[in-house]
Length: 375
Image (tube, rainbow, N blue to C red; front, side, top):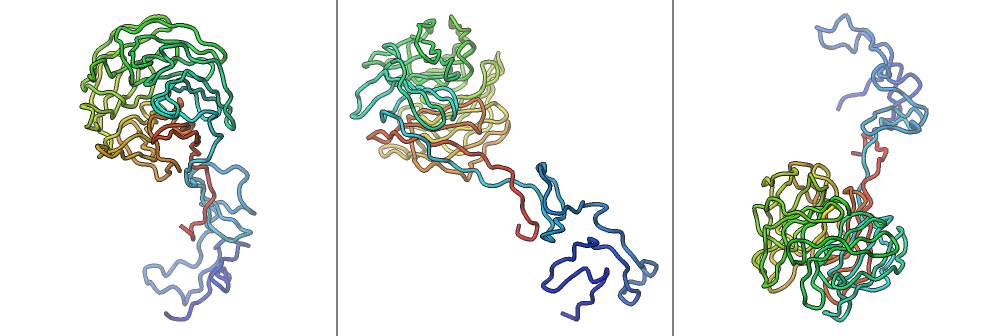
């Protein structure tokens, strides 16, 4: 490479750094204009007309902002860091097959099985973002396994379960301190795909007595259940997320040794097949909306006769699924986890047996200042 000629008032300093005093502006010496088509060019405007110089970094840059740090002499932009899972407080009682509601700073889990399986429990625990506190026990038969939960910590709904080997059509409301009976479902079942809130819930598909998966679906208005259009695929132990009038159900299994990838969207009146999951999954958790949702954990394929427990999060943007690079430290299924957004999720308890008491909280990628020279 030939000798480097310093132009623009010697803007390029030793070591390749840029002098920030005039931000790449100045005259171009005539001998350095080699292209005959540019014979009349003898100066250029400062780049600061396009990219603003800052004596440091802006106090609150927005995502996508670009600036020149005249102190560090670096061209910088506002991008994203890396998403991750953080360790939370342990459950008081390790368990699996639980119902759950809320988010990572205000969660509730209830029912399930404790060690050794199958010992059923009605124990309820609440989470404040750091520790779990025992609450009032869920009523029988919702104290069994396979209960579905939706809603918030102080306004949760539990429906369907397998208590002491007895399937139920019961539902119950939790107000943050006590349980009250809700309306009975039209189908006795467990392991439904749930979405919505405690006064406007959706329960799609289910596991019926006699080891049968169903397409039957119901809506709840806070007091009574109404049968709605059936889904296109029979399944149980799938994942659901969204609200009562705009929801997604996906994955699950049917028959018992076959995982599903199929996904469907509910618009309040009909179901439509959408892009399938990238991997067959059952008994994970779903959270978020139909345009910003996710499923996480579960049992992947192949899972029979050896279960393949998952620790990944799969995001949905309204048209496609993408596996997040952020993975949980604990691969698990049959655990508690929920949220109305895909960034406020948590995972607590779950299989493989012996059940774990571990809790993890998802930490979304935060805005991060980056240098162009490094990326």
